Image (cartoon, rainbow, N blue to C red):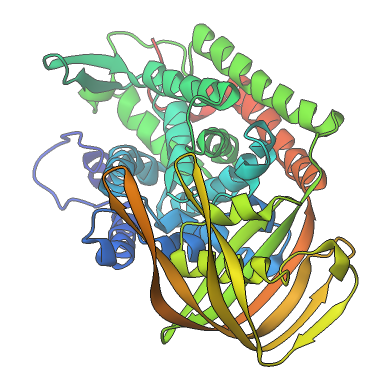
Length: 460
């Protein structure tokens, strides 16, 4: 037990073997290794687009069991150096203390369960961001780490953290953990409802935080909690013992603020459950192809009928070019293809490719040859299954100050397979909302009724 307390950074007794937070360190190592692999092509400054497409969590794919792996892979992908540094820093800072109380297995369960719930919340609240929020990949361990923060809040509300600002000059100050974590949670909820966070999945953070609080009474090792309290009671741990004993748990004000924040989340979920969304569905599309001897798997989501604009926003160049050519050939979407099957062999044409530079729009004809294609279409005329091969050329834009020229680029040869399905966004939002609501209610119960039996250091 002494070693476990020392792993929190608390000096206890004489020299002894230091028990390290093994799971916390292993998770950090795995995340760092994953970042090295996925950012190597960009000199470790940022993740490659391919990995985001392959492993990012996409809300509209949650109904497809073959894509559930994304819930887990997204927890080990990070956008850039700052993203992974701060995530791993907070995991190390708070994870050690939580793991010491829960133990290795229970901590791991809490971590991944929080990450799963974070994905559910992200999906349930995507209606606030509009249709595009359902098709943008989300990456990062933030949701799972937020669960660790939520557990830390209940276990250690009375500890102090050292916070600071570096601008305009360094200022450092002590702040109570409960105040800091509740303030952080409030910012995530506020940014989410006001859409002030841009592409950051703040509702995933909020969902993970809620899950950490809700799951803690279920996974906590109560024997360890008792051992911690015994040491504290007999004044063995001066760093954990106040001048006089006070009521354990969160303070009244903290409970009020948390309850209000939970109520706002519950209100958002309830709104999504009761109201009808203005947009109903999207075409969830998985694209697998070989190009230049490299195999790719990408994802795209489309709202009919304006595919051209949505294709232009796809980050992976090879995917964007492939879908652009298929769309120009009216093989990706055409109302005339409703409930049809199409077969093509050795078909060639000069396809019009739209080029947009600022407010300027230009068109260039690109020779494209489809040497084999078989496609099936749904009632909307959108491709539900297609496979084949084609050759085309990339289009390069060369800028000269305010002027530009368009030149043909490399010859590209594709062998592709495309599968899509219609996803009912309203149904998706309601299902994930139904799963999220009990989690919020249980978190409220934990804060109001369970905090005293779980807290190790009370909030003064």
